[in-house]
Image (cartoon, rainbow, N blue to C red; front, side):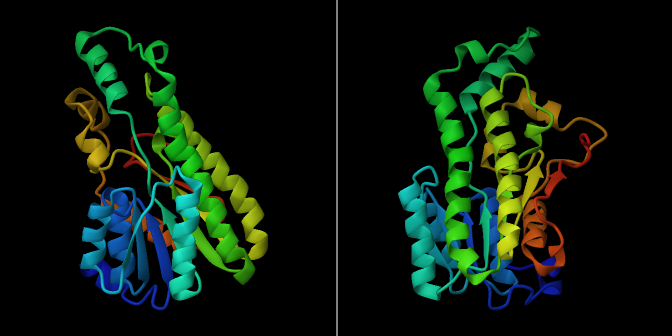
Length: 268
């Protein structure tokens, strides 16, 4: 479960209670494993109940929760369950999110054909709302639930997962870029409010990362993302390490930060 890096930080989250969304795969699963390896009791949440149950089974004392973050009632029930079982939450990492494979295929088709990308005029309301509902509304639901639990205790740390695409927007991917830019602004606004109550909110903004989303990215786009002069695609564990840093006492003076983790593809 752990590795040399985890062993070097063993006990960093001893006695902490952590809730991780999107923990059934990718970055969320890596975060859940890192927390457990460093001593936290983990509540692992994901819309895919079977996947998150499998991850939780690996981790000592972990709890699996089936949660659609787009549904505020489900989010509230998950947080209520954690508080019922352990009485509190110390850290929350919100990694749940979705992409749009259909739009990616349209973009890749244009790239391969050497023609301009044309997506926005073809983008349906359902596709737009799905991405915004999960990525942006879901972040609001999780932040709201976290503050309801943490503010009365005057302590806690929340980490949201944004995206480098909010800074370097991809032509033909307006809904994803908008949703992640919204995550950044929402998290920063909440951070300014929450710190008065001892709760820190920060964001990690990954670039290309080897997750299920990346696996669905057409080869033409993957090649563009992996161009020369930058590190290869990040591993989920590399992004998880940044999330855990933001959640830890080592980041005590970071509030409302958006840490760009894109391997040097661009700077802001």
